[in-house]
Length: 100
Image 1: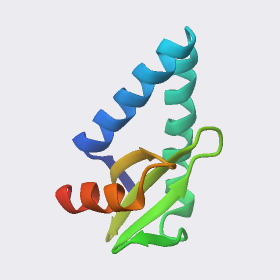
Image 2 (image 1 turned 180 degrees about the vertical axis):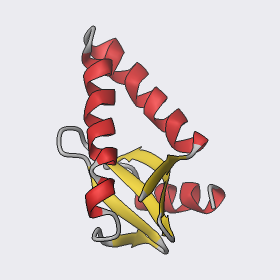
Image 3 (image 1 turned 60 degrees about the horizontal axis):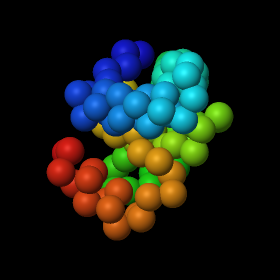
Image 4 (image 1 turned 30 degrees about the vertical axis):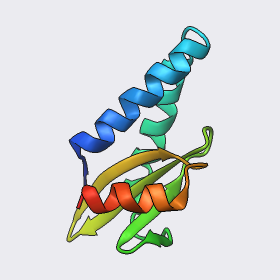
């Protein structure tokens, strides 16, 4: 199994890092470490998460209120987006349509 984090998801992670880093020094790094661990868990659990929007599986982060949206393509996991889980579902759906 290979995990590929698309540029769009990397930008989402960077935005989350900046937000949390402004809250407290070092919190941005903790955010990235936590989300990286969640994404790495897909090596074992990819595909078991419910599909939230069309063909995208949604993994909820263990420590932060974020959701990781990914899809399966053979032996590859493509992480497409990382959004705050309290976003408007219509906004999330629109963003995922743009990232297809």
